[in-house]
Length: 97
Length: 139
Image 1: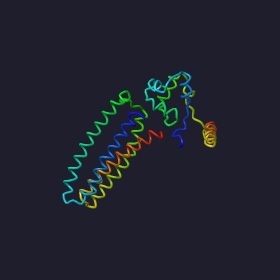
Image 2 (image 1 turned 135 degrees about the vertical axis):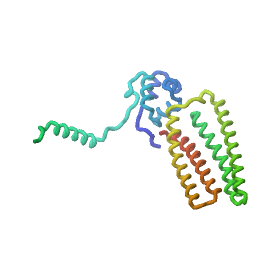
Image 3 (image 1 turned 120 degrees about the vertical axis):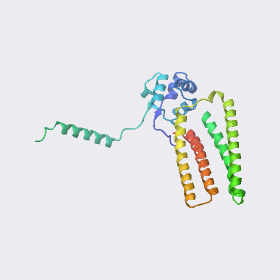
Image 4 (image 1 turned 180 degrees about the horizontal axis):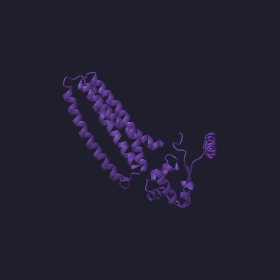
């Protein structure tokens, strides 16, 4: 079964490094042990606030805990960059009479 | 399994059993009876009383058995409840439309009532089932 979320995380690894159980982490961040388990297995993406609380409880920065693999679609990125460049060029043109 | 999951599983099982019994009687012997309007009303009262008793008893037993988890409710539980409520809302809407359709066709009130009760039950059961699926599959 495909994982419902694309967000990956290192909670299991970081928790093991600090000898913290799922229940202890759950108590610290205000969720149940089962929710911590679901987050670790990428079955649930926590809210932004819970994500910050997890990072704080594990004493690391947010992007050290959570990752979002993959890249922004290149064609979309190029188009956005091209549009921005054209807009900048247009704004620098002298006013037409 | 969270407390919410256990509670949902118990309540869904109770609803399926009690309303399964109700619809077996109502769509079977009661539907053909000349006094069906009276019979189904009496049965409905019995069903509601039975549901209240079973729901209260099961929740008390669960709360005693899993005392430490009884008040546990977090953002995941709330999100799952919202999602399953959304699914149940669609099913209830379809059932209510079926009830309105029956009323427009001037059907017997007995059948309109059964369609509406059926819609309520299906919505509640689907809410429970979708909750259990979301807990297992993730969201």
